[in-house]
Length: 259
Image (cartoon, rainbow, N blue to C red; front, top):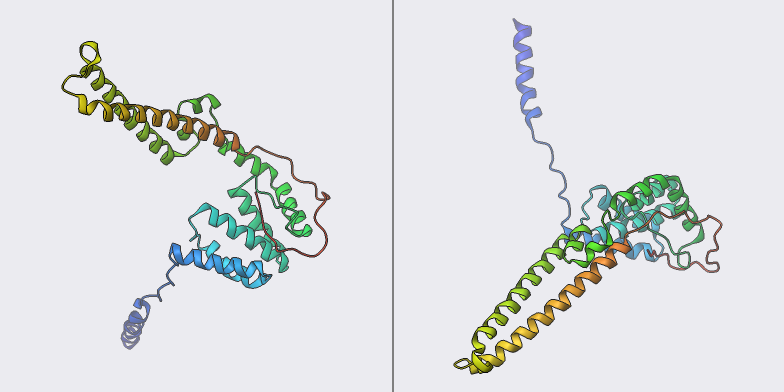
């Protein structure tokens, strides 16, 4: 009996302790705060303080707080370089692989990046060439270039839905304006095109008709050019750069990346 009472007392004492809530996790930075941290890390990276830059970039990448694809690419580029130049080759390889998953056609410009970094990056590319080509195949255009001649169909096929809807809305509005004004002008023309009773409205309505039709032609032309540009801009599988390719020599420049 005494043992049972003692066990019950221990459970009662332990209960409140177990029921205590865990310490709240540190709140993730807002998008604006994350971009400010990224800017600070890039500043450290540019002046050659690679370990400090990597320490700033690591939580941004591990928490996946960066939503913008360009910010992700910039962070991974600087993180990979910073880790490599700090001696963390395995971490640098993971960062470069993540970069290539986001942008399979990414390249480092040997005119600005240290030769050993370019070689290491191309080694990572070569090791995962099959994965990159598969990503390029999946993300590449799967439609004929001819659909881009019918905007916004090309925008939708290229994955630019917002732009496609914007072009579609503009085309509908301009086409409707052009057709309505043309119909009114035709109705008001009357015998001998005198526009009797509508003389004051004739000129502004004519200008509106011409402007709306001209704007429609310009918008359609823009949609065609935009669709074809992004259709042919899609990356294609490429052979990895040779590790013995000529690179810049001389004093070490500030590392940077280009695509």
